[in-house]
Length: 457
Image 1 (cartoon, rainbow, N blue to C red):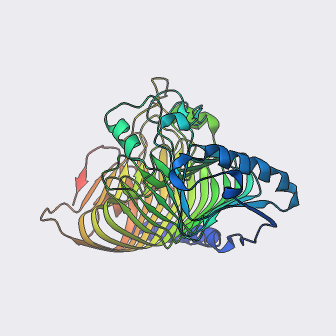
Image 2: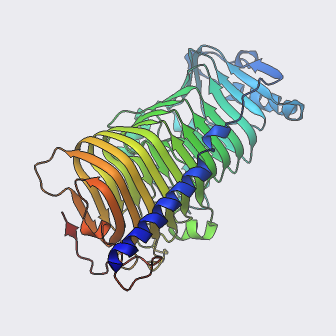
Image 3: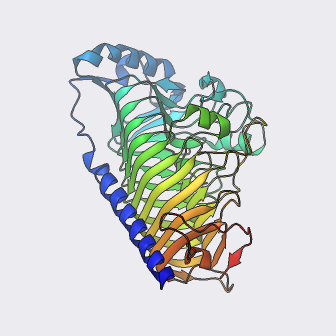
């Protein structure tokens, strides 16, 4: 009787926490800024650009943006890109600017690495993600900006990433690959109504940013493109991702916040993030991933009304010893999955380290995760939860979940070093996710499974 009472208290506690997070973040995507016309506008043609897909237009873009800086205190300005194929290297935007791509306009990233500037690694990472040292600057950049919009009438930004994928796969890179769009230390950023193709690495990477709105965009990279990722909020807060269609080689959406000791020292979390009404596909990664670089922390995230298809993993939480940080206060609700190898995954043994200076005793915390109202068809494994023996994953709440399992294996759920609570879950989860408390535990202290043994159902 006492165990049932404790379980009921836990259920009420977790469901109430999920409700509070949902209420707090539900308005994040409801408060998108209106895109009022800028009082000043110029065309890239006025600066000598040639849209033949062959002429390099980096200087034309740079000159146009430099000219438009003079309108920053006059209501801002718009840089208009007409139909055509506009080849360019890295360009840097300015505050109070709208970059508008007309229908039929295609910005092409140069395939010559000398056209992409080199920059220092991000301080929360300490080195390039792929190669130690510097990294290539992204195609379109913003640093310490305010009020910047990249939008259009379904214009296209194409990174022409094949050469970068080949260099990555052949281990020929001297520096880490660039992204298509990166904003650093910026606020009030909007990316909307565009198509992004063939990124060298990430498509949209807001890092150390606040008030970021990404909506009504399409993202595509071939399934075989190595580690291409859609949208990556990184040590950023108050982020809305809505109405997007994303299909990439690796993760569709990945939330991050720094790498081991560098992320711990920088100390900026990703938080207050709202993701809704997105269609996601990830060939070799996860439709939505948390981590594994999460050393600054990830919290207060609401994911709702999403469709995940043809992906290796649906929802995944990643970390490992040495990361520190936390993933907590996450609500994932109203999800449709189809053709997914593993619906849910949480791993405490994922990823590498930047160098040998990381602290192996910096243990991450994963707790207060709600997964509810989920339907899945043609699923191989319902869930694979593998926590850390010294820091188990706790307070995992599963509710109203039904998966149609296509595998002949009797193993639908795999669990170790994890505790939680579940109701109305088919097929039934591991006992670790059904009996989180001992009789002597208080309602605020989940039972830790410290045996390290794997429970399989």
